[in-house]
Length: 219
Image 1: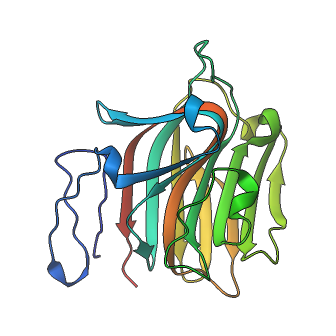
Image 2: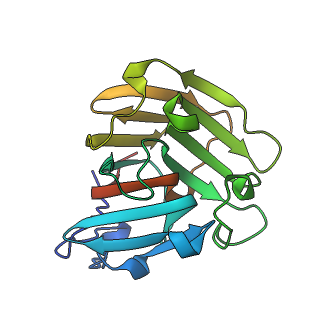
């Protein structure tokens, strides 16, 4: 198995195809692109092996490197609830395999959720709508973003300060999204997305991410 490892650690090593070795700088804020609806009340920080997003409104945090092929994305993440100004237990979300049919990258938007409607991507929204829904969508560049799967029970919603281990897989036309070893969503795509960009997405909350990795799977 060829393994591509992207980790939020200074010692991480990237092993892409063809044997090339690169040392990424995943702890640097420059490796991420933050799109904030309200930049005055929002910020992105990276320290002590963690990426923290403080969002007073909508926020999308893109990882700059394009990903492709069969892969597994894993990370640990918590919604912080400690009395901070933006602390709200809601919206632990992610985009993956995101692309813009009209541009080289999907970057350069204003952080408002509707500004991403014209992309192609997979989207999981955990604890959205004031922590009342958990949903999966497949965006079709502005033509469709129908809710394909949804939960409203407490077991699929969020708890403040709890660490969630997320695992996303993309392989052979199927994508899955799991938390703490439990599969929440799976989707067999008739026109699968095989490359694009990954992003954390939230709104009016504070989230902390650690142990971010992307592993390429063998065919």
